[in-house]
Length: 636
Image: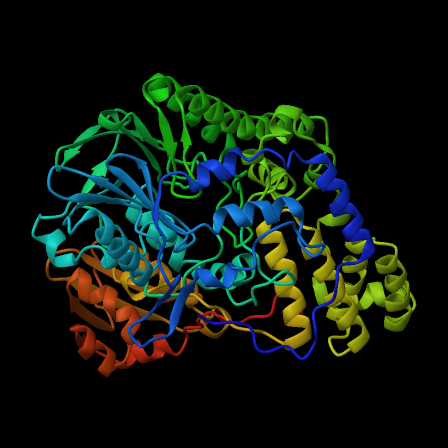
């Protein structure tokens, strides 16, 4: 597990302003309510000792033991509400949900669920990494017996719900029909596209969002609200063998009857919920968890639809509410009792509905996203529900996401239509405000007064205008640190503290690779061509013309790729003219070419045959501009 370089700059204590706000919050929050702690501990069978999971070479990919400091009352450097959530989420081990349904929690960002059938076990959402998934299965088998895996279900298309699949089963068992893999319709396309198209940028920002590289501790990473952090092991993918296409579809695997509810365009573009009539249990996937979720993640993604999300939960209550005694999800801990289950689902439903409806009401009164985010408050029933608080998503950035979904990036003010980019704007701001030293001096006054938001705004201009200004970098790092200490949202805290780390110690890398080989190998030919097109350096390719034919020997499909005017397009339409070069490949070997390179050696390794002017491929390869997995975020 990659961590930030050893810092030569000690972390600072909490500013008195932050400590005061935390005291006020402790006085206001119902911290005497221990129901969540009882639920989170209920059914514990055993914990994994030690809590660390390592790769084959001995390198750590997960270490839950690093959160042992999470005990007692929150220190001044951690928001007391986030401290409470992190203590709950850090709990680790094998838990019984009901007899026959078990979860391993605390071995990755997400939970893995094991549902016992007649002879084997169905695995739901096998974590991010094969190493953590295998460790979870081993813990289950240690206490429940050596049951074979009889099936796998992916509830949705995010990597923490499928990446560890080869830690619980094999491609050979799936291909042989021994282990069906069930997922919502459209799963593979969304799972692959999200991790490849903008995967480099998302992965880079995810390093800040989850704080996987940050030191653990009361002045460092304490969790991410949804889970503690992400594992950094081997990501895999086995393509589903059975699609769920409609609500009400039923499947029985190893004697276990499952009734599915489709929930597309909610927390993920392809998502489903599962009811187990024989257990009176509902798997809510990630549509109802113990936090306000993201409508737009800080790592980046398509904006989610809170209207669809709210309506899906209304449907869930109607379909399963009176037939469910426990609801569990792919994160956090279950909720037991039919009345509590319905109340929990109703509150989650109203949470997303309120954000959607009230945002649109205010949009239609002329409010901008920033204004809505600053002024709109949740009703008391939602504000006071622990599971509706913004540990992962926040009211602030979710409201801005609703605005973005409907109105886009532009707020309608012409002054914001053609603004300068950060460096050019920074130079002008600093000049207008009397120079870098003057800005830093004024920002110091804002910092001392506890106005960290304004200090961060003006100091960021100085850093982009003069990256070498030591005083500005140091004060901005201190400012980000205090904003992190004050954040209730785990991902905000991680972003702020990661920003402080970049300013003090330089860039610290990206712990996880989004476009893992197994994911790239499942690109369809059109998706592979799109992935190549995204990498074309347009200006360098303006005057280049290349035609490539791709023949798929296992499907009979034929594609023409054409590079012209800096654009790599593709079509399956018949072509009259000859291509510069023709590639013959299977679907799988063509996808593997993405990891081998467009060279003679790469073609050979991938098992792709080339005929014609092979130099056309090297000319194309010379125009590819892959992303930077270590680009700066808070500095130019």
